[in-house]
Amino acid sequence: MPITTAVDQATERLLDAATTGTPCAPVRDLIAPDDAYDVQRRLTAHRVAGGARVVGRKVGLTNPAVQAQLGVDTPDFGVLFDDMPVDHAGVVAAGRLLQPRIEAEVAFVLGADLDGEVTDDRVRAAVDHQRAALEIVDSRVAGWDITFADTVADNGSSGLYVLGPERVTLDEAEPRDVAMTLRRGDEVVSQGSGAACLGDPLAALAWLARTAGDLGDPLRAGDVVLSGALGPMVPVAPGDRFTAQITGLGEVAVRFEEETT
Image (cartoon, rainbow, N blue to C red; front, top):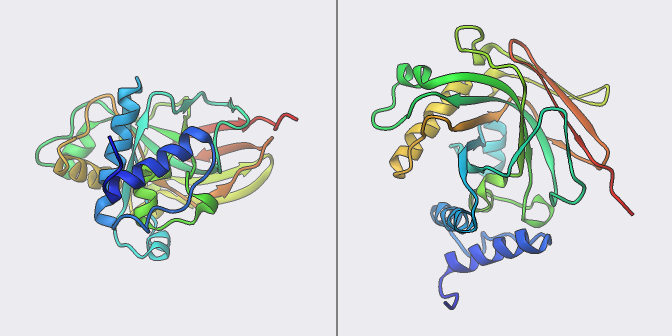
């Protein structure tokens, strides 16, 4: 079918960037912020039609400073697919991502659906366990030249993610109280806390549950939810090895392969 609408054009632009491995121009010249989730849904449908399976969601823009930078006052979200997880201490192949950056987060794994009325008690009860996580974000938009519309349309600037090996219940550690240190090799490159993520990573999970439910696609048992960055995002270069330590949740690590010549 011919491309006839701005949403179609934005979808095609981002899809072409993902397919060819060549970052594209921003899509904000084509769509308004209110159209961005329509683009994301079309790209998700394309992935699912190609055999990918949705395994969870990621929350972004949970830090007020980042919200201010993009001129918004709300988080956003993207979709996690079954080809995104990387093993703890695993290796990301050279060239797999276009413009990777990394941040440390609290990941929640749900043991129950979060549909209907979402209360704080239901959110806590739905969490089976939490894990230290690294989100490896990426952008199909050249130079990370993004606004809210660009990042939402581009699946929340998603890439890959890594879950740490320790599974910790909410009774064993409160997410808002954790402290995070991210190292590149032996160098500390980012620090933060659970409180930096919308005041409490559980608040980010609650926001996501309500938003996803309002959009008719509620969170389900088994979903992985990356709740948002605990500290500043860090650029990635070939050969880098990152390790995050999150108090109460343990360690999570990943290495990036050297570029081949």
